[in-house]
Image (tube, rainbow, N blue to C red; front, side, top):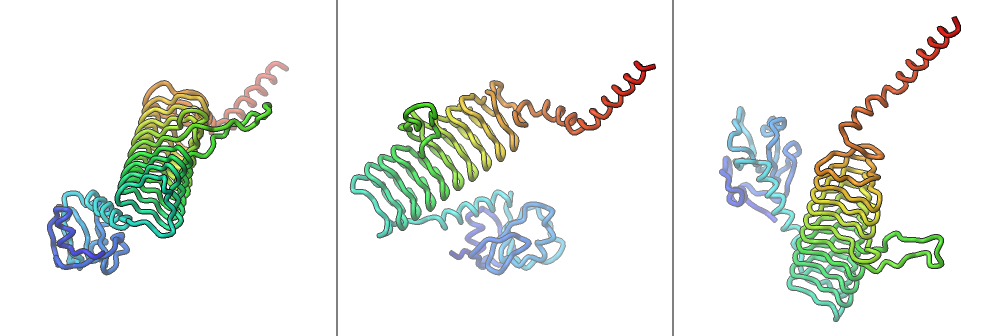
Length: 343
């Protein structure tokens, strides 16, 4: 799609310097530019690029003072970073605004489908599924029996949702993610070694899951992701885990079975949390840390494996780095003491 500087200024509430008819059909970094693209300048470190960029339109702050001529049309706004983010959101909405049902999609006669849905090639919507309005189901998505998907939710290509799971409104599930696979429950000593997993997964509203995540179904009851949860790629949530509202997990975070995680918890990359723990609201866990016990105090920062209070960990780490020197000093003192004893 193509827009003029005048149209963009109208949407952003900005003022124009240059040609109101300058046309753009793509986005670019200011240092890369290109005819027909729009960029922005928010970081003063990049100010020099305003004089060399070949972008057709650049969003800048109202307070930017020019010291030389520029070739781009400028759209001046209060906050260029925020304005460009708004433009990105609008661009993304237009790009992803798909509708219609492919002739190669399968929708069961026993499924209930809302208005204005998109179902791509080889998407499958099974018996008893209930799909809300404005839902987007990309190619090769599998929606199992009795699954419920709320309004305005998007499932990108290759997502698999096993039977009986529930996904709320305004959710985004990225490619390759599997929701509702069996939890990892085996009893090597029993006659029936694999313990059947007959629960489900419940994902509340406004949740976004990255690519190739795995959210296991519960043994009994539900594995639950509360409202506003955001996951990076490659996050694994085991059976019967409950993740509280607005938690943010970076890539390769793994939570073992039946752990209960409070609200606003943040995990950096490669965090491991063992099963049957309780993690207090507002806990922050640093990268590659392992939680092996419950965190009862709200708002703490945990570090290390096994993890403990980050302040204490940093002090202990200083000693650990100096451990070789400390051992040499102790050896030297012990030899001196033995020498004195032999006198």
